[in-house]
Each structure stands twice: as C-alpha cells, then as structure tokens.
Image (cartoon, rainbow, N blue to C red):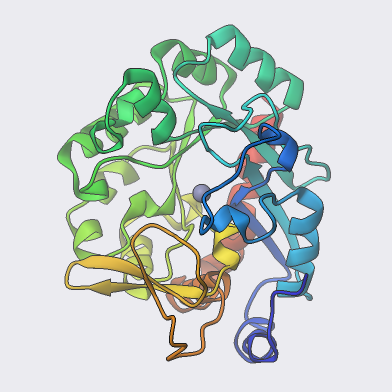
Length: 332
Ligand SMILES: [Zn+2]
C-alpha cells in the first residue's frame, strides 16, 4: 500500500532528505492490530482509523517509514488506539534499541492490573485519554479535567517506577485554560519522578492558545516535556522553542493520522484541519473539489519543525531527547 505520490517524493528530495538528521524518533505513534478490538467492532465509516483497513501494526509502520523517510532510520514510542472498545491489555510488541511502548490506561483500571500490564510489556509509561476518564466518571468529554485522567494510586505507581505519561490535555480552552494550567503544574510538582509528555504542545494549534498558556511556568519543571504531534504551525513551534528548553521537546507525528493528506491552519483564533482525503479528524474542512494538491500531515510537520527548530537542537529534538529519556526509564 503506497502512500506517496511523485509530488510527495519530490518534497522529500528537495526539502527534507538532506536537512533531516539520519536518525529520527517519533514519540507519538498509535500501533494496533484488529485483535485489539472485538471481532464485530467497526470504526465509523469516515474514522481515520480506517485509512489502513482498521489497524496499523508495527510492521506496517516500519514499511511506511521506509517509504516516507527512505534515507533515515526511525525509532518510536507507540501506544494503542485509545478507543473505548480497545483491549488495554494489548501493548505493541516493540523490539530494537530505539523502540518503546506505553500502555493505554483508564482511571477504571485497578492499580495492580496496571502494574502487571506495565511489567509484562516492559513499557516505559502510559497513555491515558479523555474518553476513558469521561466514561469512568460519567462526565461529558468537555468536562473532563487533567486530574481525572489518572487516579492517585496510578500516579503513585508511575512515580515510584519513574515512568512516563503521554498526556493529551482536555477542555475546550486547552493550553489556555487556567484549570488545566494549574493541574499540569501540580502533577509535575507532586510526581517529580514521572516524565509528563504533554502531547501536541498542549493542543495549542493556534497562536493565541500558546500565548495564553503557562509554557514558561512549566519550563521550570524538569519533568515537563512536550511532543509536537500534529503541530505544523511554524510560529507556534518557534514560540515554543523560544520559551521552553529544546532538550525537553520531542518530535512526534501522531501516525497513522499524520499519514493522511491535509494541513492544520489557523483561522481567526481557531484552527481547522484542511483535509485532502475524506476522513474525519477533529474540526475539518474537506477539500472535496480537490482545489489544491495536499501532501501528508507528516511532511507538513517535518517542514514546520525544520523551519522552527534552532540548528544546534535539530538532532536532539528529532532523536536524542526522546531516546535518552526512554533509555533512562528502561534503566531505572
Ligand atoms: Zn495521538
């Protein structure tokens, strides 16, 4: 199943191949097989999870990376697809020196069960998600708070073991939300041995959201990290590098979603996904008339990071920051 067009390959040759380091690490990849879901389970017809036939196993990810980045070696941190119906006991079976996995977790999961899943899979951390917290606390997704994502006993377990949490922050105002900001800071301070990787740069996909964030306050927490998944906004990335230590920023893509054709753009203090393919991703405008020719979100993200990252931090952001972090966790 080829993804790239000849026009995409030209982007790689002209803009990416020589500027990217030879080793990349993608800190935000969803990996799952059909066996993670009940036999009769089906994603909604336009769900982006259907792009590769309802699954995205490691072998397909490896093949895809060879196609998208033929001159690079790529490592990853991966976790399952955080759907309510997914079996959270199934963790991607990574191998190799720079492949790591995290366990999907709900606040409903007893701490003993979580401990067993972590030990059995040799995972470096967990991936909570707001739908799990919403279901467990019977809240609307928009009412879920950062503190709802993990229970205190789960957090204590993770802190004792010194593991990582990839956290997709909730609430409509995202990184500009004062309650989110207080709770993000409180988690970092209360659980100093957990590495908190706030996904999607705190979901700040438009400028005002990051300008009203507490990025600089979090810069003071040595265990606060950000991944760049789905952020292709150059000014947001530049602002982040200007106000937060580059050694705690990790490249992440959100594959396989990032393998779709599209681009996220800012419109009037909001953002929208312009979609070149007929799939649902958050707030989307679909280019059904094919007014423009899109490339993948993945390439758009690489373009934006290459433009924003300080030259001296390029290899660290694209590879070493993440590998050093996850290797240090494995050695604990
Ligand atoms: Zn994701």
